[in-house]
Amino acid sequence: MTLSLTSTFDYVACQHGAEPTLKQVFCEPNGTYRLAYSQKGLVTLKSNFAIPCWSKVLPTHPLVRSRGHILKKCEGEVAETLVQSIVEEYRGLDWTDLHVWQRDIAQPGWHGFEPGRSALAHYVAEAFEKRLREVEDERAARVNQIASLDSRVLEIIIDDPNRWWIATRLVQNVEDGWVGGVYVPHEPADMISRAYLKIAEAISWSQMPIRPGDQVVEIGSSPGGACQHLIDLGAKVTGVDPAEMDPRIADHPSFEHWRARSLQVKRKAFAPFRFLICDANVAPNYTLDTIESIVAYPTTSVEGLIMTIKLSSWEQSDHIAEHLERVRGWGFTQVAARQLAHNRREYCIAAKR
Image (cartoon, rainbow, N blue to C red; front, side, top):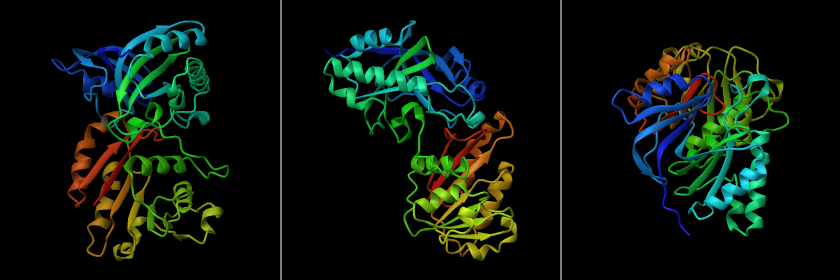
């Protein structure tokens, strides 16, 4: 049986602290949405229209990590009971993938917390997989797997342990296919810093075509977390930073350290690099001025950029559109922005020729 369902509520998931900005963006007077419910990391929006549950019309903003159409709220004390009732009710809906995730309980990096690593969500996902196998539903194999383009995802969003939301979304891009909009990279046992997670997510999201042997330069490279991942990909990496690098990177044959500030490096020295990475703890305009002075230099042939733009306040996110337009002015035709799950109060710009 195929259920025909519509929704008048959407949700957006985000980092703790971004909620007021998204409420202001989506709940303008006489706009499409009105605020329905809000918790840290999760905002639900009442739409003026009834929308089919697999509609492509979804809230979009660089600070939005995940988004979808809400079908129902479920509450109960026993997870297995909730799982059984949801499977019975929604087996007939033509979803292809089931994603179970929990809204963030803290900011990324706080006391080791990282999005997408919820023990509770893992337990509930296993309960769904078990129940689907019991009723011989072949979609049991698609529980919390990365969903491909055009897949129809049924979502179980754990708001609180006893309060879940049922939602749907059609996968329209790479990040829509991630569980809860979070890319969870492999973490090496000797991971140098969280920058490893950020660059791994940025490359996956942007589909930046970094290949073994490519020459990559990173501005603001200390202590070497991002360089570690780039080296793992087989790239030849140059780090520009006046601070020391971790010895595991500094001594690696695929790494060269220019121990200086980027402004001290002659612009012609950047000629060999195909990709430029920048994650410097400076104001947005300083980052953009620095990168522009490099990519606009006549001998520079950078094909791809990944930049972290710091936000001293959430209000600075109002300038994201201006930042993107500026990067397009450098000759990059594919330019996008996203607050990565592993970003803190910052966001990522990816650009390709």
